[in-house]
Amino acid sequence: MNAGAEGNIAAISATRAARVRRIWLCADDYGISPAVNGAIRDLIVHGRLNATSIMVVAPSFNRSEALSLPILNIGTKRVAIGLHLTLTAPFRPLSGNFKPLVDGAFPPLKNMLRRALMRRLDKKAIRSEIDAQLKAFQATFGYPPDFVDGHQHVHLFPQIRDAVLAAVKDAAPHAWVRQCGRVTPLRKRLFDCKGLFLDRLSRRFRQLAARLDITTNPAFAGTYDFRSRISFAKRFSHFLDHIPDGGLVMCHPGHVDDELKRLDPLTTRREEEYAFFSGEGFLRLLDMKGVMLATVPQPVAERAG
Image (cartoon, rainbow, N blue to C red; front, side, top):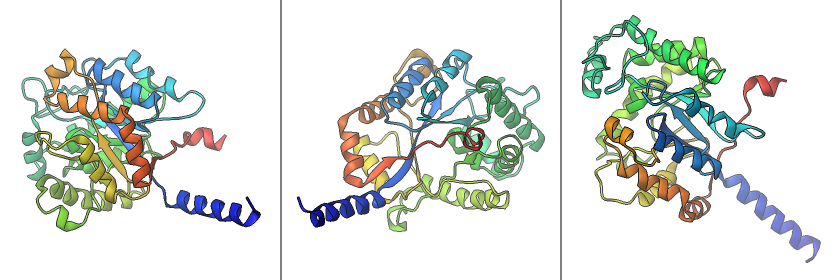
């Protein structure tokens, strides 16, 4: 092969590399059950995920389950570890004076959303609970979360979003926060009521985050109707169509155990997501779409040292 041909091949390779979109693929709900935790760790080990967010309020979450994650980052950091802020039933608060409570637990999602939209939440109680979950994360891992998001997107709700951003600014100033606004063409979003609602909430959330100089992901994907019969592989392919460089795709892979069944109705769909991410079809799809998982940066303290 002559020098000119080699130069052309190198140029083509460089051009292709420049076009690759590097995304965050985040498994939510780490901590909800041992079977889900094990499935998420397995995908991280095999390079199929680069982020996961922790439910510190989950009954089966403990130090052993927590420390199984940072072990995977020894040598090269392969997974960003975030806080999955949880403020809805059936989970219980960590703070002592949270209100309102329903049978000792957080209110159901619809109840919490209605109160937030009507601005009837107790601001001090919300902030205290957010602080408690951030402190629990810090106490368990020894450092603040890389990012913060919310179970059932509760962190985007009015009143709650203000408390979340203020708490992150105070306790985890280098963390980024998840916004759930999409860049999918509007014509493809019109019949997705949930997605449109999250887009609207996220618009205000981004504005508030920017005022505090808190970083947010540039785009989001991953919501779908869990009752739909469309395969997850097909769903995920659509998620990748418009996600830009640096965008985040949410997912919920896992195995099913009794603890998961007790706490969450999302069961068999987790198995389907796990099977997809652990298979070769996932890797082929990333290659076909020109997408790869982003490299997880070292902690700020390590980069500075």
